[in-house]
Length: 455
Ligand code: HEC
Image (cartoon, rainbow, N blue to C red):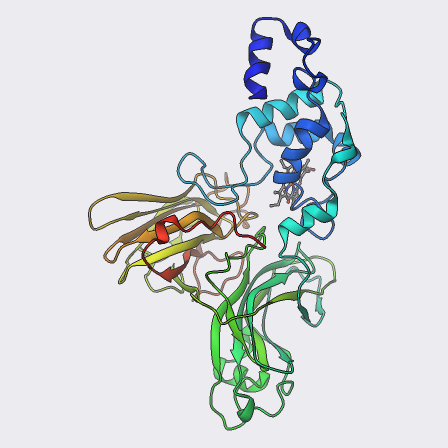
């Protein structure tokens, strides 16, 4: 509404008259921090630009923001911040980080007009903003032992076991992985091992971690002490907490998700991947655990297609030097499902990513389109409502990779052949994947709101 009045005033050249009108001062022309700018920044920027998050400085108070006014204006008008690679004209997601044209105009006019603060006495406090980003104070924290990273410019892949013991079996609603070194943690896949307490005396026995490429998975399991004392495998819930570059913690509404959290258990990290660093560094990551009073009602499942997934990349993912090449993945959904979120995944030379679904009726459902792939920002794109895909729906994915010297993200100069190497996951190898989280469909899911989950 403000924008509308504002534009009319500006358009008819009455800007001064408008802002000096007898209406309550702050309304027109005078865009103030307190009234117009703070709500935008606090909603769209602060979740990353706050103590402990990935942003390089905090954007909370008037002075935080005014200090960088010009740079902020540039970043928002160029749509570099907030980072949101998905095309907002193709599909929409919950908590989409996209500024409207009028929000950008306000920020820009506010900076140009000398950044008036307005009445800042009623502004949101950092504490109340943080509360919205996280689920609140965790019930329990489980630390990942500090990992020393050598400055050798090489990727590091670890398989880890982080055991715990509590006094009784319980349930959890959410498990949040908090990376210690956000610059170096590339990704983590966390599974939850549920030991049978009668078959495991000491959950802490065994190594904490081994190098992933060291040996085969059976011997890794032995070294880490993942088996029961009688040599049988414990049960394991996959993907209870995952992290990718730029990802923000996202929790489900209470009616879905959740896990059984036994008295004796362990997180199994397969794997924890650190990107290369040229200087020695340390990572101290941890998990925030949020208990639930009742067993999970609708456990969340996951499948992936493409690299390491249930449907292959076609043709084989090999991108010759000095070429730009297109690949496809397709899969048919065997049962009615309700999609929660999707994660497109590629590495450095990804150029674009496009996924859509075609129902048996022939209707096309746009899933996601990323015109300019950006390795730095990989999200769990959560739909606004559960998205029903009936049995027989086909998901199609198209990915383009640019292995030319013109691609500034090409890790090799001159370009050399890049391929998928048995899912080696090295940053300089490639991957092409769509990860899908879902629950089996239930009547009414189409109206199930994922956006306004209450902490
Ligand atoms: C998802 C997390 C995230 C969100 C949301 C976000 N930022 Fe950032 N921002 C970052 C990170 C991380 C960097 C560090 C540079 C990089 O990695 O690109 C950054 C860098 C910046 C910079 C410095 C750029 C430079 O070249 O020095 C500015 C200014 C900025 N952000 C402003 C904003 C504003 C304004 C918003 C909201 C409209 C916003 N950011 C939203 C994560 C975020």
